Length: 83
Image 1 (tube, rainbow, N blue to C red):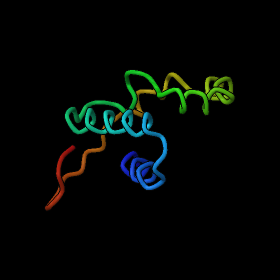
Image 2 (image 1 turned 60 degrees about the vertical axis):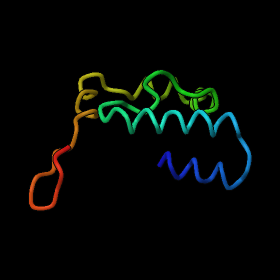
Image 3 (image 1 turned 90 degrees about the vertical axis):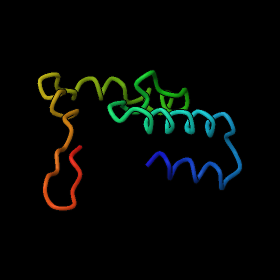
Image 4 (image 1 turned 135 degrees about the horizontal axis):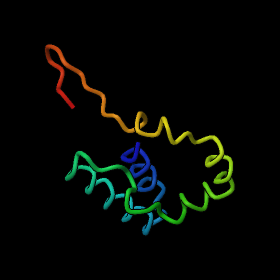
């Protein structure tokens, strides 16, 4: 998804700062397979877009199921890599 977003930014020719930030995050994810996207903090544009929904998101978030959201899928079988 992030690579598609990057391609869109490059095609539009806008958002040099956004492009550089996204390139850096993609590189970080490629270097560390255990890394979560934007784990060091959201870019300002994304944080601002989510801000109006923060209270609703906090209200519906369930701490008890949070760890389940982060579990890695394990696929095993012929031709499937284990993640």
